[in-house]
Image (cartoon, rainbow, N blue to C red; front, side, top):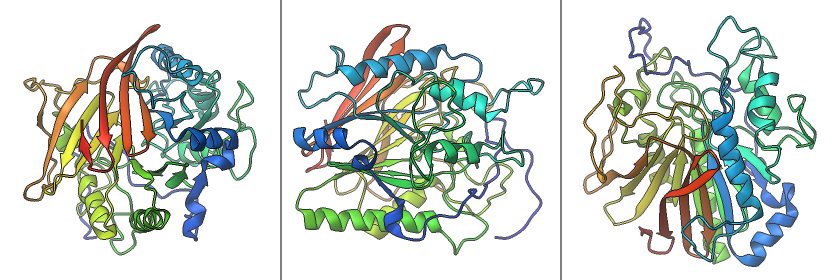
Length: 422
């Protein structure tokens, strides 16, 4: 990487995080990146296998230091769907009681008030923003780290990355010291980027670090790309296993930073060359992912992300007709919900009705014959996703939560055989 003076006059909406190595090196063997649902919840894994369908929740940007009300309302609405699918939804018979919750990053947030002595205390943050809100959610909770979860400091009590790994990448079944609420055990995910294997789907969780726009690997060492290589290997191995099995498992990709967005500020918030990392050679996350899909010969069925505090659904249509839903679900509890039309300078762009083209940051170009369009969005309400994977079908519902009222705001069906959205 060519050295030059750091750029400091980047736009105010650009993340100030510098690409930061993880506290521990990645596992050496490919298989040790995998956690199976049956290893942590065998009864639920058996139930999923028996009924042939699996339903789970997803939500991102759930934590909030000051106002816990929205997060608790969302958590309560998801908890209700653990016991029953309820009467609100698309009404498809394949939808089951939720098997688990998968958090899309930014699990906890520090206090922006620097005079607050407890404002950066990760023990306090995890107890009040994670363990307390989900104490009634009687299912396993998995997660990928967001930019707020990946920051590091010399003080063990305030270092976010260490606490994320302590709560979600524990070596053995134990109660975390951060949990002062209930008996929930820390999760045993193998690493911050990892594979969850279930009877009918694999979820590949990426770690997009804390630099603006999301970066998988150290941008200053272009020849060393451990996470990118891992992703290619996982896609390749899943493709091979599906061929040998004769029964295709769905492939879901989860990453905190959105690879695609229709937000008016995404030309800057999605640009990894902006910010104090000074990563002048970094390429947009969507470009890196597309290269991994091409190299492995395997595209994911759906891509889920967060970071922006709103809901968006985009459709990426390949030249051969293959469609992939890209869903941004970052309205899980951290307020305020962001306006899709607000630009980095706080001015507002002109609202459009879907469908409309995605905003492409510098360096991101679509190949000939391919399109990326926003087909639905909600920038007014907090909410969460309910995803169901059944034979040859992926269903997704976005629910908004207003106090005790849960409403279906958007949904889609993906035919996993034809890869067409309906």
